[in-house]
Length: 195
Image (cartoon, rainbow, N blue to C red; front, side, top):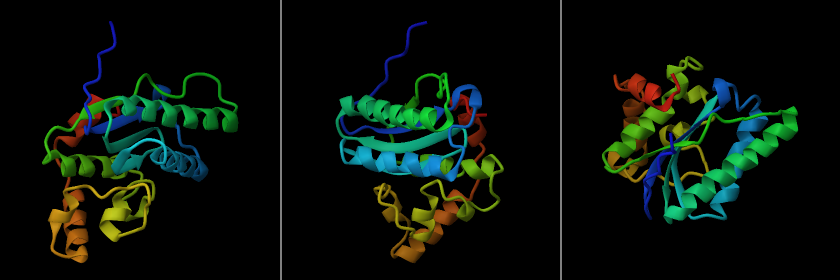
């Protein structure tokens, strides 16, 4: 079956998912997570995009981003994933495929879905049972929004500002919003091949 062409346009907002081959770990140590985040910063200096939300899980990753020029999405993802693959193969003397196929990309066409997508992304560690409290998970954008932790790779989600009149109200509203589970999360996990 031929590959489906990605739907993308200038200024598009996309939810990107990439999974380890055979659901294997792609982040084994803290250094691996840090390396991937440093690569995001490196590519922010090369390609115009905004990263609103992210979550790096042991065997997959989620990025919610806005790409300014449609042709840059493939450059960004190819460069980012390939650079990390080189790091991984060198560090672990790994042979074979690190990722399971092409990255998946879902176009976010309604502004109202931006916060829903952020919630879904940042709840991953809870759904996977890695933590019982999201404040304990440092490999996502949750700490930036819920607690104001500095994170230079993030551009504030455009809908975050509407959550309150001051920063403390926004943080509280965001925590309440993200910590509320939704029934559709398992359906999305299955659709992305994560479950």
